[in-house]
Length: 267
Length: 279
Image (cartoon, rainbow over all chains, first blue to last red; front, side):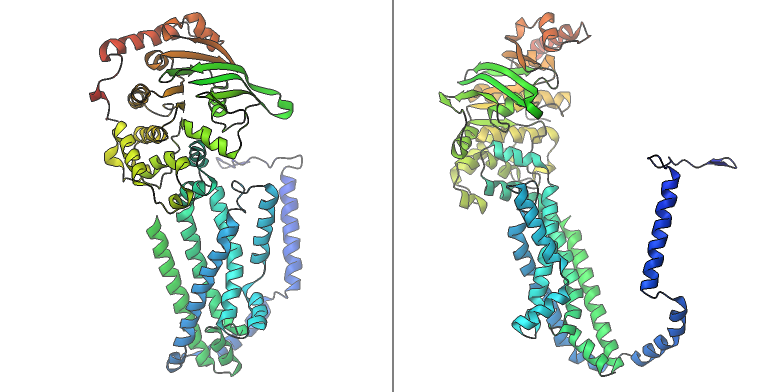
């Protein structure tokens, strides 16, 4: 295609259909999105119609009730504590699994696939759902939140730990084998030094995510500031809700800041 | 003494690809043997079959009268303790200190539980430091391995091999990724250690001139078979063509020989200590 001295330098897609394939995929994508839009009742008109109500809601929230914040200090701290132990226990659960879930260290392909599936199941269930289950099991309160977070987190941490192991340079491992080192020695001296920076990064990222999650766990009674958020809304005390949102924002931004600072320090 | 008898290695579907077709080799203690051969001739495969990083299809490796026909786990560790390896890409653990990389050479002999906590017997640490002195890197013991230059990293690789107190060192193209000056320094250290510690060295090389200069004995491999085994002086143009079939450079040997002789005249058989330690 040449136009006014310019040429489109793009190879036609491979395959017998060429550009028709692109057209086909585009049409299929559009149809799929249209179908989903109907399902979700996507409507710009509704949004515009609803704008005054959003304004009304925001009006009731503002100004945030700063006096209420003193009641939020304890729940906020509890949220951080949940995130802390949720992360630690997640790491503890993920560590023994990750070596078997790494293709290059797993003793057998069957074990590798089985461990990957274990991690997938753990990761597949949302924290809130897990929290509902554990609230029923160990009772209302932050401990249920910690367990829920640990299990979901272990699924994610284990996967990323294993992927970091798969990306290491095999050379040093081979050198350790050639020197007659055993499996444990190979892991401690050949694998861990190579994966540690990546692992620390993943753990910090998980902690950051856990802070965000811990702010909503309270909605199902699993401890933290989410409980205050949901109860203030149910009591139509929107200024208090706004105060909760402000505290949550501070927590999330703080966690983000700390974690990115720490991650920059490892490099 | 190291004996290799009828070493064969085939792989692929139906074992169709024959990398080694029955190689016999005897190496005396303290002998510096250079293996020449084109890429794919089976040089690496031969070394890797000796320490069983690759499992030979047939044949045996006898070290100090001990045959390792099909070693179990424990025998494998015993074998590997006696056979050290030096790699083209040095294969150091980059984020560990130089000293710990050398201590890797001691691991087969050490109690597992303590080493996992990075605790080593005093005598082994002293030995590791001594090995670093042998390659003039004692002052870098505490540095992280990835802060060293390529040549220095390969010297750490030699120190790690030496720390095993092996009977034989296998060097798989140890200078292939180094510049000429650094290459000579590394090969000089390797030969010095071979002679001083009376350790046999089996060294794969791509450079004919280095083979003639450093080798006491040259083994030629082509297409999985030993096509030459003799002194460097006996390497003729015909031998070079046997090792590198189809090589269309009639001056390859002459140039290599000229280089090796000139170096021999100016630098002496073993390089002076002043030449070591740099690079």
